[in-house]
Image (cartoon, rainbow, N blue to C red; front, side, top):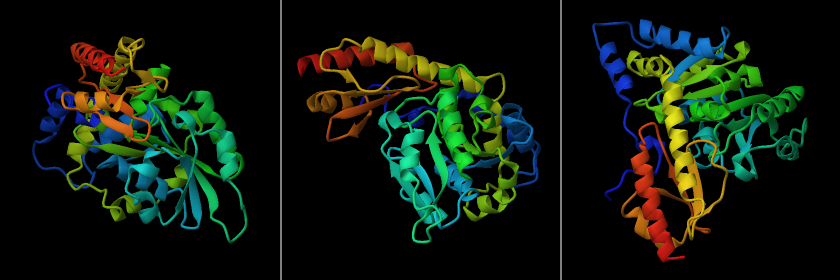
Amino acid sequence: MTGISFGSDNHAGVHPDVLAAVVEANSGTVPAYGDDAVTTEAKRLLRGHFGDSAEAFVVFNGTGANVVGLQSMVRSFESVICADSAHINVDECGAPEKLLGAKLVDVPAPGGKLTVEAVDAARWGVGDPHHVQAKVVSITQSTECGTVYSLEEIRALADYAHERGMLLHLDGARIANAAVSLGVDLGDLGAAAGVDVLSFGATKNGAMGAEAVVVLRPELAGSMEFLRKQSMQLASKMRFMSAQVVALLTDDLWRRNAANANAMAARLASALEDAPGVTITDPVQANAVFAIIDRRATEVLRTEFPFEVWREDTGQVRWMTSWATQASDVDAFAARIREVTGDHA
């Protein structure tokens, strides 16, 4: 393979400003387990976006953030309703169900987005001891299909959940990309939209490896310190993880990184709009392009540019861009796609 990877935004390196922040944090001795000034600053910056009542807990990775966050929301006889394509459902090796001891109820979600109607159809057996009790609605922003919930769509799901004594969880692995797509601040996707707990994704946005659980409903925060430790997500040298969050939230680096990733995906989609043998299957609203191309073309292209085959049954592929993707990378990739798919059209 010789070309730049379009396999995942996880394939990108660490932004230089993030690396510099980690190096700067590597000075002297400081208290462990988050009792340090860098972690205090990370929490302050997250509260600046998500509100003074927000409680933030830095963790190692996205799966950890989802599991720890959901643990504060659901009991073992309750369930989490999510999209069938949700990361918690298909890409976390059963970790949520194993560690929560609760059931995930996955429902069809075209374009990766839950609707009130879909959630309502999955919520039944209320009060019946023979059935799990629906407690949490979990959405991903931006979705696994590269689409973005509008603020109105999130609010509708939140209102539905809250009116029925349920809670709304947001997997924000790519929350920065969604905020940029909508032209809003990170906090507009939190309590302002009715979200109760969310994960703030840093790794896909240019960090080395750090995420945060942000609890927006104060009564859910009391157990988080214990849940994080019990879930093996409490870092001893937390300053190095928190430094990454601080770097991304300083001078809007998070926004600049996400804006580049989104712009490069839009550029790729535009370049392939009329390409023979290429069918773009989902709206390109964040930093992912989903398309169907001939399997023979896929085999050729993947020897040069790594990317994911999303669905083997249909030949659907996923092309991801990142903070580090350059226009020249996109143009070279698009030109090669047009050449190879044209040969197999």
